[in-house]
Amino acid sequence: MIMVWIKRDCLSVIHQSIWFFTMGIHIRLNILPDKISKNDWNSVYQEAKQLINAYPFLDIISDEDTYSCSWHYADSPSQKPIKCCKNNIGFRMSGDLITMQTAESFELIKDLNYYRSDSKPKEEYIDILQLYTDDLHASAKVFDDKTQGYDYHSYILAIGCLIEDRLKPYALVHGDISRGQMEMAIEWANGILKKPVHLSELADNESLLARIRKFASGELAALRLFMETTQNEKDYQLGCFIRNNISQASIIKYYTEEISERKIGTFGFSNILTEYLNLGNDPAVLCDICVDKDSDADTIALFIKTIFKLGVHLKPENSARSEQRQLEQLSRLEADNPHSKTPDTVGSMFGKFFSIMSLGNVRQSNMYVPVEKLVEIFKEKFGVHLDVDAEVSKYIDKKREDTYEGASVKTLTDNQDIEIIERYDIEDLDNLILWEPGMTILPQLEEFIVNVKDFVEGDIPEVLEALLKKLKKANKKERMEYLITYNKHFLISKRNWDYIEENIDDFSFFSKIMRILLIDASEIKINRLALSLLNNNRLLEKYILNNQGICEKSNAI
Image 1 (tube, rainbow, N blue to C red):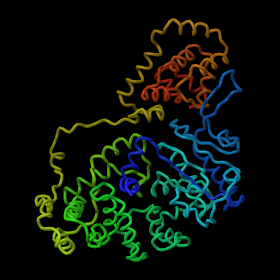
Image 2 (cartoon, rainbow, N blue to C red):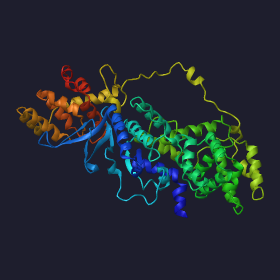
Image 3 (tube, helix red, strand yellow):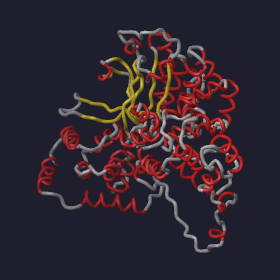
Image 4 (cartoon, helix red, strand yellow):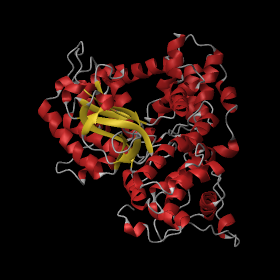
């Protein structure tokens, strides 16, 4: 029983804490391959191929043939044998060639048999959602990797949405994604494909519930799965839909089970109460669910305290509620926000994790119930056990209950000495690789680049000087092999390696590239700066090469 409580009661905090420490933003795609025909799979594979070719996905290529050393570079994915997939033919995507940000690899294999296991599921399934509560263990994984919220996240998701739409109910895309992200991904895909991709049924309440009812063992089981899988906001509108389609008895039983597995006064307990109330369910019934006839006065008092901590008694315009709401929005995972169009990143999760911790054991409810009504309910339910008026008085702040302490606009409009902050086209290292001629760069960032230039043009150790002197007589292939061998830190695209090879006969050019590759780039900021220089030829030329003619000779930009 204790183990069950730990699993369910702390679910929200544990989920977000584990996310923080493992740093993972996943996209998952599961299928029931034995229910899918080869023709249907081949058809959706060809459509996915169109999407792959329409976006600058990145694949990491290992070349053992061109030079006498192993050469690893980034290039557009091509259909080829994938070593980690038993050499089956397919595509592998690990990032994008524009930002050169890479996370984990997503593979899509052409042959459906690759996904078909030797042993079929023990039961005959008609819908992949039947496996959802069991973590889809009996299904085949097509995608199950981390994008870390990088740019290619939306485009991997577009492929997942395509496959789910074409193969439903035998395919499901899920993970750290939101309805808004799916909508944006589908909008992009529909600009490329002839046949439109439709939004997942997980985002359509009526379609999702009707689909679940086809296989659910009963109304309560249907409600459980619906609440787990819906991609819509758990608000009053959703509550109305549930109450119109699910019996009150099943709703009460569902929340009785959910609440009983959480310890009163904890984060998990307040979260499930917030969900119940946000759906517009009856607070009087909630009292019956949370507090049984054998509960003592201390338990009842803790329940009342929780209700007031949820801010149910505060008017929507109350400043205390507004402040708490702002903090909650800062801590909300993008995947939990149906309206979010963008995923979280590792960076955004740092701030959200600490915001979550600052919330304590409470998330406010959207429901408003006047204090007088709450007192009336509590007296009816608990009046024989404790002094409700005395208990409620502990949590009422008359100064904040009925007033709205609005932010003062005068402090801004009347201040004539407001500092005007100049904006630049490039203001952080992550975007430096996107620089083009004419763009402005934050001065502090520009100084950082100048430091690299000073290093490249400064004094060098005698050993390196001797090596460079030796390489003055080396041919193009030998010089390339030295650069490849000394490159320990940076993934460089094939087009930029081509650019380097084209200009490598210029010894000044070669020596500067060599010295950039020798930078100790184990620190992330140095790494990102040098990576940007090595993968943006015009940036390299402007700040390092001091030669305005080189880039124009190359098609690689």
